Length: 104
Image 1 (cartoon, rainbow, N blue to C red):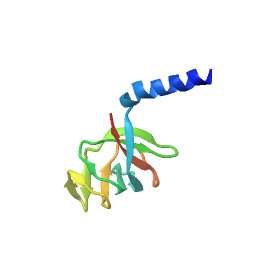
Image 2: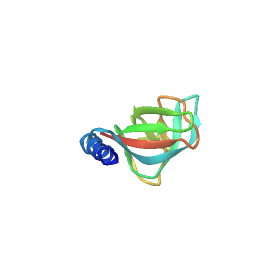
Image 3: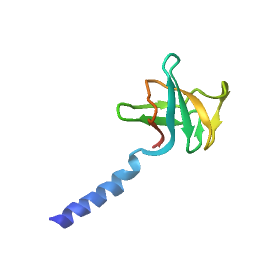
Image 4: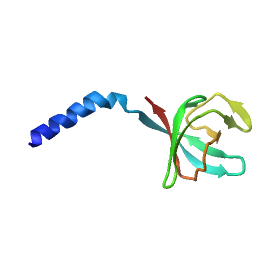
């Protein structure tokens, strides 16, 4: 019985594993300006305009596209590891929330 369960588990992962989206942590929220809906994100990896992202925290969980990003009030299309960026967000976020790039 255990052998069948292990076989089915491996078959499920093999067949459906590639269909499930994956996520990679790209940054962490350090501040949120609620009056303008902008989060400050310290990046651990690159992030490009148009990337699909997921923001997760204790009470936060939503996906959006990284559409509007800035560094020092100047619009950017791409940011690199180590940058601190302003990111327009679709919902309220909190300091400590993590930002993931989602790929399908």
